[in-house]
Image 1 (cartoon, rainbow, N blue to C red):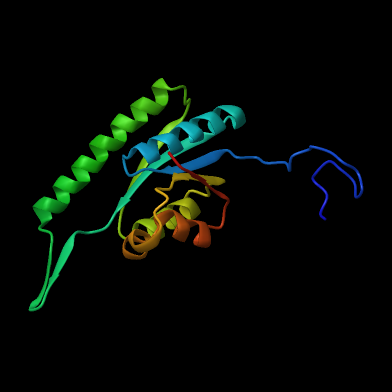
Image 2: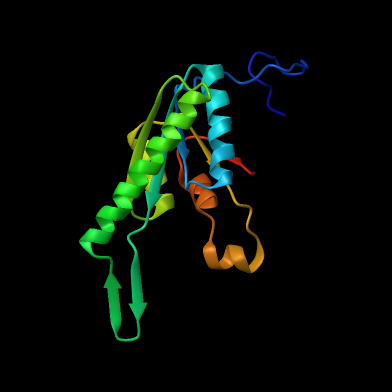
Length: 163
């Protein structure tokens, strides 16, 4: 058994490993599950005097047909970007009203899991706090789990929160 920080082998204690979380990344998809994760990130940021970065990553919409594929128009892509920015600003304001002292926002276009991992690395995030929908069975097989892929690939700790 490995002793906890602040204890010696054989000593019983409740000391917690020393953490210094100063930048917490909180990916959001604007769901109730993401809101629960944001509330957790706000509480942790208050405890550790950390900055929160709310991030939204979304794929480029595209469709595959038997005869080929089609991607979204530049107008549609701009509308998606504008909508993401508007929602993130609303969530930034909600976080500030809930007591978060420092909140910034990031958007990314691409594979959500990959973009979340990239943002965490680029920003040197100390912790990722994200919601998980808890899908299982065929729903998990069809939709996958962004949170699961982030947990597997992130270089920093990831805390998943269920609604």
